[in-house]
Image 1 (cartoon, one colour):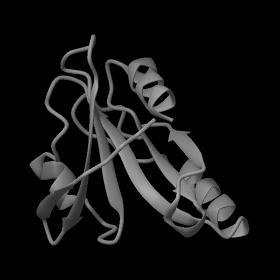
Image 2 (cartoon, helix red, strand yellow):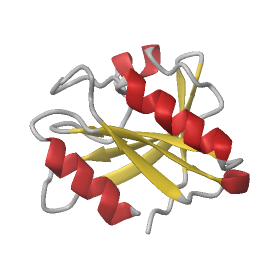
Image 3 (cartoon, one colour):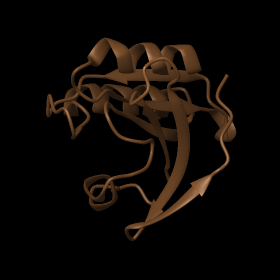
Length: 125
């Protein structure tokens, strides 16, 4: 999964990459890479049509949304103020990959509730 996330982040350069991860009972079975509808170098917005298709597939399979993923192209893997303001899913886990050192991408995970960031231990293989 880590390789797929990092590959998607590199493929979307110079823009931020984004997507969803889902699976049954809190596990992760599938990565849904998505188009960044903002086409932004410092912002992202999941393509609404792709997001609806992913949510429909998640529901059809009886899965749960596990993570919302995006990349930071030139900054650390920590939620920006914009990320905090746009964290619309308080029960979701937010997974960020930083490409600020392209030779050693860094993945970190967070919960974001009411703008408050809490780093969570994450292992992505």
